[in-house]
Amino acid sequence: MHPEKASLNMSQAAKGNQGVPSKIVVGTDGSETAQRAVWKAAALASAVGAELIIISAYNSRGPAGVASAGFTMDAQWAASAQSAAESTVKAAADEISSFGIPSVSARAVSGDPAEALIKVTQEDSADLLVVGSKGMQSTARFLLGPIANKVSRRVPCDLLIVETSD
Image (cartoon, rainbow, N blue to C red; front, top):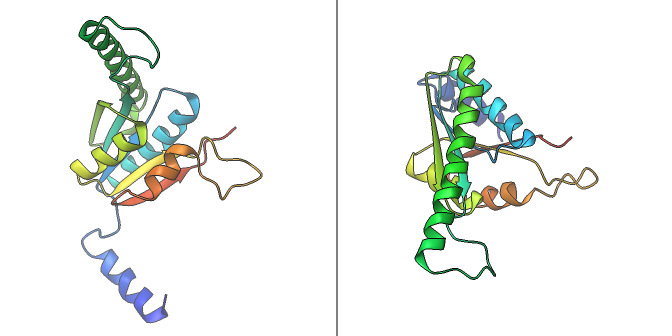
């Protein structure tokens, strides 16, 4: 970037909190590595006074290859999956309750995890999406994990990929 443009952008960013996120979305599946992304998103939301939306995606259809008795199996499967996702986001929200974030919401969202993250980010006009790097190969850091890779090409806001590998 041209130095004069960079200077102009910095002064513009200083006015009106431009460039500082006001609404952050983060996803979790309840795993230890996903929790690292939640902690990072929570710390950032606390530091800048942003709203934090924690989501967990779930599959609302029964597993492939399982003979089902029709609607009842799908409804039972969906209810169970939704309940598990709701428990996951509630646990994540409870764990960060001491961070002093002005507004935290926890949602279970039906669908593919990457699609759910994109959907919530768009619908809520979030300006930052936080995802974990799980799935990144230590010998090939330029390759993203499956969710990070999917959202990086389609998310309508800034994206923070948190190092979550062991």
